[in-house]
Image (cartoon, rainbow, N blue to C red):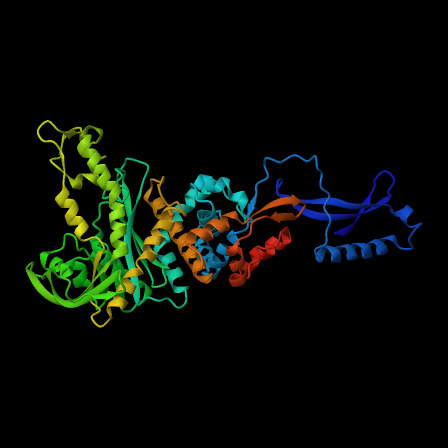
Length: 564
């Protein structure tokens, strides 16, 4: 607040008032309001020896009171809701903290200096990353919601689309930049997996190809391979055409990131889709280790006999048993002359059985079996596409090659009891193969269990960050989209770790989304959400979301502190 002096032109008289400035969120600029009208100076001189000095002291006291958090606001009970007024999000301050700790603002600013772009690439990137966590939507939708952040968003939709071309070029360098700014990386064990993302278009190109979709959709897909470290923090990702075989992606990718990130020997953990002779050989020659799952149902007879035999198992309690052995593995390689050779490698096979997993497998199969029985009784209800999954338990299925309809004119479909019994026989059994012969069985199982970290990362990316479906068509924009999702995921995972891994990524993003404030009057905002995540953020990041009322200057200080 300050003492305002206004000179009236018609008689040159000076009028005194106490005024205060505030930011008008609707009009987008600063305004002044009169706190108290005092009167004309010549009249006030009859009451005070020096009115100006006197009221400056009054203002000083009022500012001290205001500073001490005691303020009064005049509320007009007849005031109507302003349709242009939007609630502001403040939860993104926690994301801003991690973003700036990774010095991503420096990375994008340095790149921008070498371009002729009129927009600020860092400001665009912050909007796209923060909104991907708190309100994931299209690029157009993100721009329309930019007013929800207390950030500089002086750019257009065209600027955003133009920026995607630059962001695409920065994919590898941004991943390396982030990797090198996360201290104490644990890379003795790394986890690798792939997933696919579908597009809401039918067109295919070199990247978007029809392949084996995890959602069993016919749309073109792109595959993402992702490595995470022992803490579940993303290390690097790569995009592959949708029709690429999973097993062909791992080793070239691993070699590249080991070289780029200067990573030493690693133990790669992956599921059975990556358990192939070329990957085993490449890992061995590269002096790396591996822990892969091994299918039991459908494995060779020798392994199935070993799993089925009761000898050697050690029961742990009444529900769990385990055994292992060192067993030679024969892999085939092709030499420089094109000749195939056999190589013998010793690997450890760890087999375990869990009654809980047994019950879980049977419960999950119930829906498929029920569908198979219905298919047998009413085959006309299904076709080749809709019978997917259940068809494995039905014999005598024939499809019309043109329409995909089930043909019943020659043979009646029959439920395959033998197939069901064979599958149920292996419920609850799991096998793991590894190069780490000296590690104990519990150590191997514990290492393999860490694979859930990458599986959850894909789940977070697809659900909380809504990385799919992808509506972009240009390859550079697709690459930019996935880099934005990767950075968002990494920041979310780092925040999860900073909060002591007490909360899921979903819980954190949900809370950040709800930490919003409403503009009351002048520069005062009302916060109305509180949970245990806000408490943890205060304790671990020193960002206080627990105060009910905040001045705009307080909010700017909070956000300013995240950028230091």
